[in-house]
Amino acid sequence: MATRIYWVYKFENSAQLGIMSRPRGNEWLEEEILSVKKQGAKVIISLLEKDEIRELGLERQPAICTKHEMAYLHFPIPDRSIPDEDKNLHNFLAQVKKRLDQGDCTVVHCRMGIGRSSIITGCLMVQDGYKPEEVFSHISKVRGLKVPDTDEQEEWLKRISRTFKK
Image (tube, rainbow, N blue to C red; front, side, top):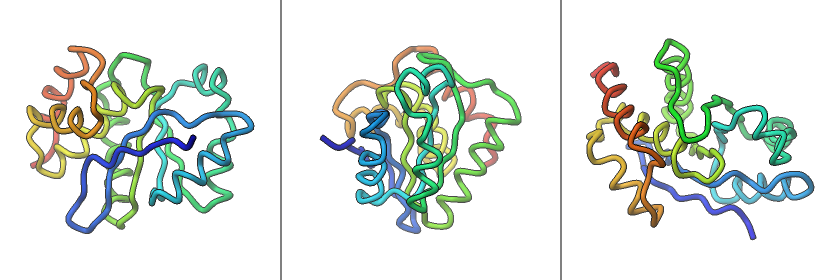
């Protein structure tokens, strides 16, 4: 069964932003990447840490994305945690925003597509004008389950949103 993308946000230029669980790894990985591409994604963002990537058999994900003319971006965040609030986060978000501005449908994954994926997706939605206090209820509705994983993640989005340029 192919990985399902939950398209949670559509930009004015028709680029979409989605969330998914991590793809199945090892011998299923290429099939999973092709399925993601068929669902419209041009960019895959992984928020997994290196140990998780190895454990889940996803080491070939960047190469397979390249082979199938998809972009692969990696921004590791510890499971059930939050990113560092530094220049790297803002630079990463700017890189993703550039792809979205080009019309590239983008999908974000962590392990289960609940916590880390929701906070990064939430950042991009807030930067596009969505209210921080409404992001998680919207994503939860689309996902069919409560996001994010922790109160810390929810509070972090509210806090980091104040640093975004209006």
